[in-house]
Image (cartoon, rainbow, N blue to C red; front, side):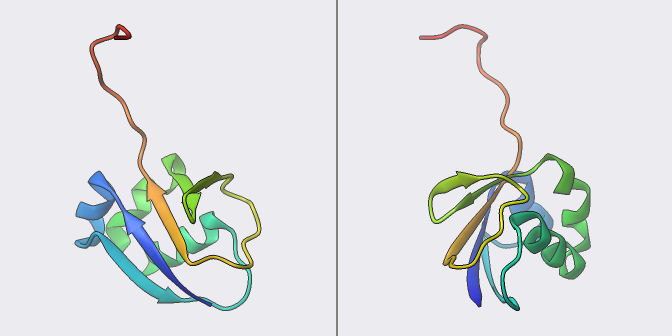
Length: 86
């Protein structure tokens, strides 16, 4: 299965690209895919425990089995703001 992996913020910096395409064998979880990517891009490793994942535009748990996927977004934690809702 060939998928496109989208990377944002610090993850983009760790990999050096906004997206990468990789070939994967059979069904894997988003976390397993991220771990495989980290084996190619070691600077991604420290981020693995704090990632969120979206598959084809929908958030999914890290351990969800993926069978049909075209795009996986790796999302770092988000913080900031002024502390009040607008």
